[in-house]
Length: 505
Ligand code: XMP
Image (cartoon, rainbow, N blue to C red):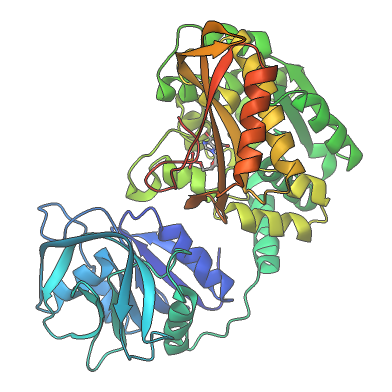
């Protein structure tokens, strides 16, 4: 996408690169990510941010700082690995040092920091031991350099991540940087919407588009955006019941979409998916298999609808989070997302016959885009649900019996949390592959363990486990063990992301 002024974020492989990009957009300036090995800067680029990354600057094949960046002569902000690259370039020294992961206090009286003492979020093993041309502007209470400034040029570095919500006043620090870049701050998601419409029109031309809709926020917004960009008669929407959805989900989805005037084709492929999942235990194998089955069923339906798969486009609700967790742009692969990284979907990706209007956005931005598109609240407020569905919440082999069991538990958990008005971002149950001993009605029992998970998040990149009132947890536990036959133990997941992910597989 083009814009009259931009901030470029150079990606060195951090899980948070896109988060930096969206924070800049939240401040009203268009931002764009470029890989560290292919940099292109023109007069519209008003500032450059160097992302974090998993490497050490002294590794043999470590990503390097391209001379083009310094030659461009605009303000530069290095974050974590970005700071370390700057220090190395300007004659300083980076060494394995005091590791700091998670929250730290920093102290500074520099105007970049809105307050003298702040809590920030660190994630580094290396640190700067000599600063070369730079001088220190902040230190952590552990004595590690937390911020640096160049004496002549507008170049700054932060050892911590201002982009994550766990850093206090991080947005004000980024705003300070944008001030140095003299940006206008008048970009909005409305501009994104218009630019995306133009991009879809250019990509698709006169071809047909088949949109896969799960009924969730992302795929519904992607379809609605497509429908604004190209004629309705060129768009075919398809909902596939893979047998791994929540209880009565498909019916609800079809009714909701019909209710907003979207006509959707429906296929019940549950038995096909469940048959193929037999004997599969490994999470990656499950994810890839499910992703490929989606493509299989979808391609068959294309032919049935009279569409030529080699000359049609597939529209998906892919989020930036899906791409980054699948290892895009050098980030470490966390898991294969069904819509990104399976052999069959990769073939579509390589043919460039994919339309993914949300691919630069996070969940909450997609919700805002959905509001701009006029979609109703009951669709936009739905909690996230993974494409591979309950298969990644049934640890181990998936069977029809386990799916039914988990559907009933999931319904009960969500009902009780809603009844207690717990403001979760996502909540669900996980069926564990172990049985434990219990006593029910004075009798020995040997039954399943269920884990309940409820998290608060903004964008799914980081998440906190929710401090649910004990009374609500007690109610959930009592109801599950009393009403669901086959379960005698309930545990509550008290892990945040990171280090855990939200889903268990
Ligand atoms: P994790 O488990 O990676 O999840 O912390 C972050 C968010 O993404 C959802 N999720 C998925 N969504 N396909 C999807 O469409 C997937 O393969 C997938 N895996 C995770 C997850 O539910 C959470 O909201």
